[in-house]
Length: 108
Image (cartoon, rainbow, N blue to C red; front, side, top):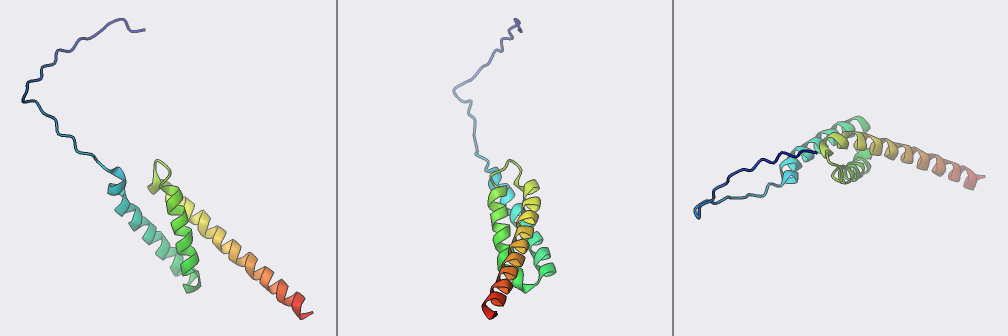
């Protein structure tokens, strides 16, 4: 335990004033984040095609919502987006298989 005490002498006059300005770190990073989101979404949509525009946009929005709940959304978002996009593709493939099986069963 520290037993030494340091006493600081402070002097404040009536004219001493401090100006406090709030800093909204989220606002500072929002533009960077939206730019990153747009770039990653555009790359993924170019690769996937027009069919995937809405599902990938939804995946990006879900990933963005989750990323903002973390201390470092710019670092977390790309991985979350890739996971959500992959889950979207898997879901679409599953639905296509179910639809194909259903049609086969109805045709029989």
